[in-house]
Length: 154
Image 1 (cartoon, rainbow, N blue to C red):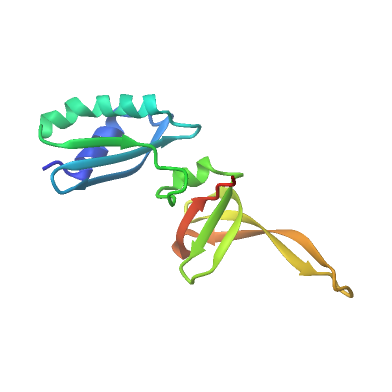
Image 2 (image 1 turned 90 degrees about the horizontal axis):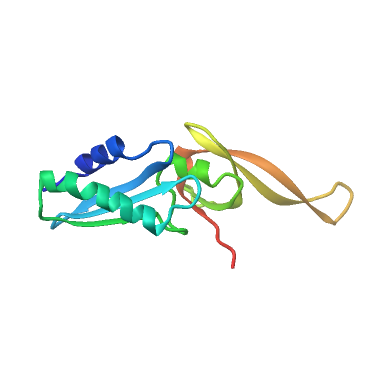
């Protein structure tokens, strides 16, 4: 049986690190291999097919009985790796914290331990009942996050 580590090792050795990043590798029963890759612009179906073709001879050398799927991570799936946070900087995201609080805002800078989120809040002005929108920059640690995903508007 092919392992996730073997697939990740092949990808790390043969993918252009400046162009692509690995989002997820999953090997399930029956040697069903799922690979999600992305890049910092927009990964195409042709690029996924090329990565699939690149993997085949390397996987065949390990075990010739497997099923392989190479895909993009999907627009609405939760982020899996720090590179996705960097890719979607200045985009609107939805963040669910481990304490159950949900935040929506514009993704800012990403650091090793967390990221900045620009959140719009309505506050009451002093001496007035009128509410004013302000933008607040909040730092969120990855350890506080249950999931982050891109917010898509239709």
